[in-house]
Length: 324
Image (cartoon, rainbow, N blue to C red; front, side, top):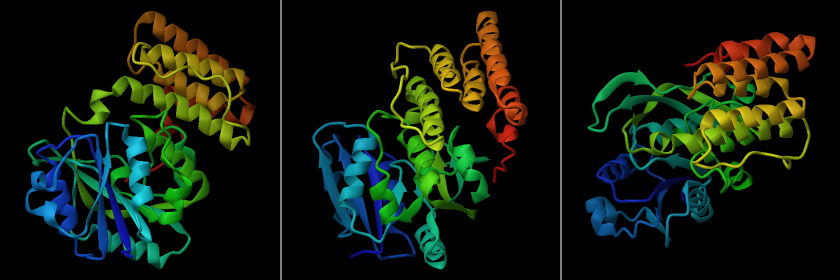
């Protein structure tokens, strides 16, 4: 059995796909398998060039595009490794990535999942001079993960049992990674290696830009679901649907109102702020201020400063976390 199973999901044969695969096959850590999940693309090994003949490739073929979550779960189910790593179809791993991550996981048995830093590149592979956002202090991951991703998901590697116990959920078709991280951080310890191990490609056709509305709505829902879990309650309960025809600002206000109804003041303050991300009309600002004030008024005295900071400053400054 391989030590590492790499799960790479793709839904079309992009010009970036062979390069992403080549960066995996060029790793200094050689004991791995690459699980290619063909999510309805109908690809053939010949389309990948010489890399398509590599014996370390394991194909999982889905007859149609089932979404990233379903495809990721199919890849995890096929994986045989002690550790499982994610990889996106358009990113490039540094040659030492797996070596460094395996060493970190073996050095610390209490560590469930490990990520690292990522340098951003453009569609042509040219450096953008920026690093992708990530935290570096594992003590901060849990509280931040209710609102956003604390580490870089396509750069994550973790223990097999973590991935099996935390499957991606179908309902978050384009933001399953955010929900995955929120639930992972509630049960396992995560870490970020203080070095770049990935080139993250930023371009106009990637999911984060094409499906911004549904991703925004998913973030709202994930914040409320995490609040329910962390309060020891069932996730079941009213939740506005995820739908392209619902403006993100309207959706954020609806989820904020539901959070207030359930006495979750901090998420309500955050969601009131989120409602202004796409709509800063006078009416939207007034509605957000009303929600934020109600959240502040409903919060226990010890939490009021945090609720106000979540609205006026956002989760990074409100929670006093430290980006790498």
